[in-house]
Amino acid sequence: MDDAARRIDVLDAPGHLRDATFALLALVALAAVAAGCGPRSVALYEKVMGSPSYARVTESATRTREVRDGLDTRFILSATWLSRPWVSAFAEEYSNIYYLDAERRERMISHWRGESDKYVRFFVALYVPEDKGGNDLEKPGTLWSLRLVRTDEKDFEPVYIRKSSLRPEEISRFFPYSGTWYRAYEVAFPPEAGEPAGSPRAGSPRLKLVLSGVEGRAVLAWQ
Image 1 (tube, rainbow, N blue to C red):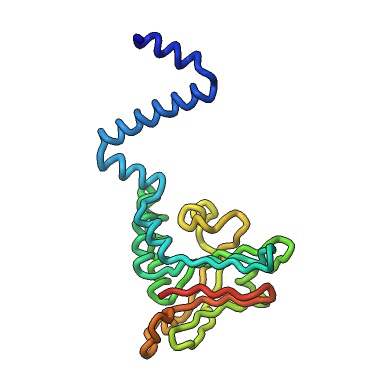
Image 2: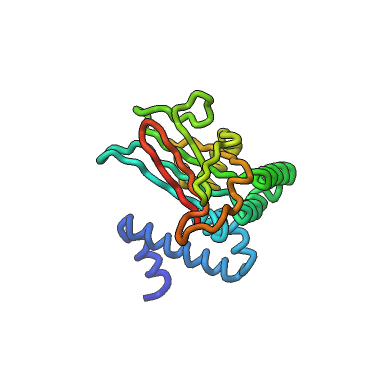
C-alpha cells in the first residue's frame, strides 16, 4: 500500500480511530523533537510541568489523615513539613517557574527561607465538609486546637497560623493535594519544638502535628 492509500485509510477511519491515530502521530513527533533537543527539552518540560525532584521531596515531607464517622467524612488534614531540604527544593522549583520575574522570585524565596530558619513551619491544608463548617484555624476564637508534639511528648502552641501567602494557582502547583474545597494555611512553631530532646524511643516519631476539635482528632507524624 502506497503513502497516498495510507492517508486515505486514516481519513476514512471512524472518528475515535482517526483521533487515536493522529494522537499517536503527535506523540511520535513530540518524542522525536525531545530526543533532538536533549537536556534543553527536559529543562523546558520541568519549567512547565514541575520537576520530579520537587515532587519527590514534597511527597516525602507530606502526611495526610482523614477522620471519618462510618461513611461520613468529618475532615481531612494534610500537612507538609517545610524543612530545610524542602525549602531548598521549593526555591529551585519557584525559580524555574518565575525565572523571568526576578523581583517576585527573590521576594518569595527570601520570605520562605527566612521564616523556616526562624521557626518550625508547616503548610497545612484542611478540608471540612460545608455542612459542618468551622474551617477557621487562623481565627482567635476557633474551636480547633493545633499542637506540635516533640519526641519527649512536650507540646507547643503555634507562633502563628495564617492563610497561605501563595496565590490559589500556586497552591495547586506546589501542593497539589490541597484541592478546591480545602483551606490552606501556613503554621509556625517555636524553634525549640524541632530541637532533639533526650534519647527518643526506637520507632518514636520526631514530630507529631495534632489537630483536635469537635469533629475529631488527627495526628500526623514525621520520623
